[in-house]
Structure formats: C-alpha cells, structure tokens
Image (cartoon, rainbow, N blue to C red; front, top):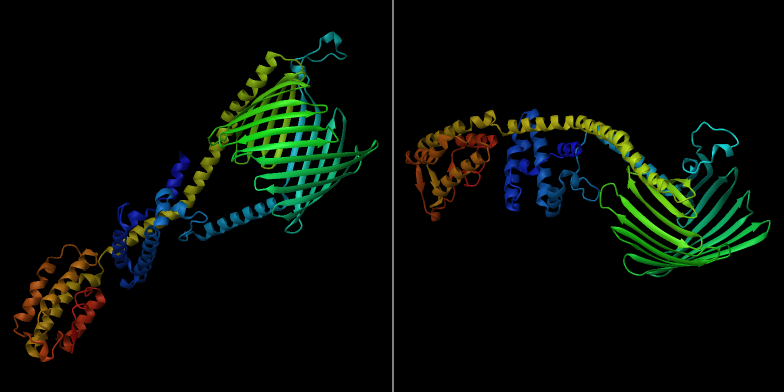
Length: 569
C-alpha cells in the first residue's frame, strides 16, 4: 500500500487539470484551451524578468501537456499508465525534467546496469554446488551396545558427498565462443576433478558445432564433438560424440536426440544413447502458462523405467509451483512431490520429498540464484517410515513460514520503507517546484499595471479622436463598415476579458459601443461616402496614432483595431 501511495505521489502531474479540461475533452476543446493558456502565459506579455521567467516555465508545461494529449496514441498511454508510461523505453514522447543530481544518479545507475549486462552476456557464468547430507541417524539409530564409542545422545549428521562445477564463456568473434568449465567431486573421502575446454562456432542460422577437450585426475583425456542442426522449422537434431581414454582403453560414446514440435505447447523427444549406459528414451513434454506435463519411457542397460510428472504454475507474484512425479522401473519405484517459490527478484527456493524403494526417504532443497544453483539432498532414512515422511513434508513448510514471518517479511518491509523515504526526499524538490509554478501561474494570470490602465487609455484615445475630428478633417468611412468596426472592437474587448487579459467585472465595456459611437457621431464629423468617391478606409489624424500604438503595446488593442482596418493619415 505504501508503495502504491509513493507511486501516486511521484506521478501526480495531471495534464487535464493543467489545461483545465475534462478527461473526455475533444480535440477542439483541447486546442481551444491550449490557445487560451498560451495567450495567458506567453512570455512576451511580461516585461518583468522574474514574471517573464515564470511565464516561460508555465508556457512550456502547457505546451508539454498539449503535445501529449493531442496525440491519440500518447493520450491513451497517459490515460492508462500516467506520466510514468510516457517515460518507459519505446514510449518516450517528451523529455522528463530532472535535477542535475537525478540526472547524474540515473546515468550512473544505467551505466552500472549496462556494464553488468554486458559482462553477463560475455561470460554467461553458470555454477552448481551440491552438498549431500546423511541424516539417517535421526530415524535409524543403532543400539548403544553396538556402538564402538558411546555418544552424547545427539544424532550425528554428516556431509558424505560434495560436487562443485563452474563454467564461463568468452566470445572470440561474432560466431566463435570459447567455453571453459571445471568440476570437483568427493564422496566418503574419495574424490577427483576435471577441466574442460570447448570451442563453439555458429555456422549458420540453422546450426552450430562444438569441439571439446578435457582431462582429469581419475579419468584420462576426453575428446568430444557436438553438433546441432535445424532440419525443419519444427524439427531439430543434436548429436554428441565422445572418446574417453582410460587405463582400460578407449571408451567411445554416442548420444543423438531428435526433437519435434507437435503443437504450440508440446514437444516430442527421441533419444538414443550408445556406449556408456546404452539406452533408448522417448518423452513428450507439454508446457503451458499454468502447467508443465512430462511423460517418458526408457529401455536400456542397466536402467529401464517409466516416468510421469506434472507441475502446476500459480499465477501469483511469487510464481509458486507445485509438482509431483512417479517413476517406476527395474531399480524400484520412487514418488516425489514438492514446491518452489520465488523469494526475491533473482532467487527461487524449492523443496521436494522423495519416497521410494529401496532408496528410502530423502529431502531435496534447491536454491536458484540467477545462473547459480545450490542443491542439498538430505537422506533421512533407508526405510519407509511415516514419521520421516511427515517431518520431511511439514518441517520445511514450518521453517519457511517462520523465516518468512520473522526474517524475510520484516526485511522486505524495512527495504520498502527505506525506498519510500528516499522517494519522498527526492520528490520534495518537485513538490516545491510545483508550488512555485502554481504561484507563478497566479502571478501571470493577474492583471499587470499596464492592463489596469488600459480602459483609461482607450477612453483618452476616443476623446482624442473626437477632438481631432472637430478641429481638423472629418473621418470618412466606407458604407456599411462603421457597424462592422464597432462590432469588431467590442468583440475584441470581450475576447480579451474572456482570455483573462482584462478583469471579469468591467462595467465600462458594455457602454463602450455606444460611447465610441457618441464620440464620433455627436461631433457630426463622421460621414458615410460612396465607394466611387475614392474613400475606402477609416482614417484619423496623426495625433491619434500614439494612442493607438500605446493601446496595442499594452495588449488592449488585440482585435479591436487591427482587424477593423483603422489607419492614420
């Protein structure tokens, strides 16, 4: 909940409120609001440097909001995801304004992620650590008279085997890659290791080949060749040939796998293995969004078995999976069930219980951390004991929920609170900036001193026109144009008042139409002449020109004089 609130605080830029329109506003309404606010916040209408700077900032915000809402695609993205959706990769429409510290922090973070991603792609490290634990003393204890050394009564838990393997890749060219891998194994005090080097070349978009060399302390040199080829868009084949040199001679081996896509979610495999543990295996794997199903049958020496496995995938944030399998063959029968769950961004924890004859009961715990795997098989008993099955099933669940309640959840909550506090500190500057922008908007919308004197300047201009008309030349007007002039002037003043350039309460503006008419007509210096007489425009003396220019410079002559054809002669 806290995270959601923090995201709302970070994404509180409402473009509709900024333009003062409805969320269902049409393009014409958006355009009208944009024009109105552009006239209101235009920087050229201010002479004060501070007000001009504030108006420029507000003008840019209005322009940014109109650019987003005028485009149907970006408007749809904004309506669904907000301003964060516009900042996602591939959806950028406008550049987000950040402080220098935020820009530097973002650049450093992106640079680190880019370097880590490049290193991951170049090396592609893979590792496996397996630790076998013998805990049979918990359920199969010997009698004390048969023990050589009297113990303290506590069960003895031992590590009887370990295995460690690691591999990295080094791209040489665009098509060649070197692979270096090694492994170490030990069991009951005896162990050994090996190191392998492979060179892989991508021959085309349909295939690649790999040549492998290896050596170890327990086994002799190893030479291998692996080939991969796409036969059809739905079928591929893999072949692996190996020659193992040992004290007993050369031991060849061949493994071939033929696979075919049966449908969108189903793949069939046919495997033939000759040499070491020869066998023929066929399997069908079906993988969907909510399930994973496998059925396999193998005939070979020394093992032949049938396998059926099912895994259910829950559609939750933790990606919980529950699985079960049944495997029966010449070696016995094994039933295995378990579950796995995502505990962090890159970590998946899983546990499975294996019950079989003659293997007994075992608990297998596995942790996947990115490309690293940690595997802990715990052998509990050689017999089928209900108590061992119960503790192997309930024990991991109780331990997991206890750790989740006491350790994992408080840790994640503390991390979220820390991130939330950091986000609040980082948005303090943005909130202050928005407050300043709001104050600047009020200052820019309030009438300036020049606008306050605009009515009096217009009145003086009209009186000047009357005096000049009485003393000098009469004012000639084309027939039918005088009404248009007055109507245009009055409409211009009403437009200025609606655009917030003039105060809303102007009682003089309603009588201006008749006032200007009285100024010129009452002096009996306004004449209507025919077009044939050669007079086609409204003119006044040069003494009225300064008033006209002064009104136009203050913004009060927006449409009243420029569109009516008034000029001085």
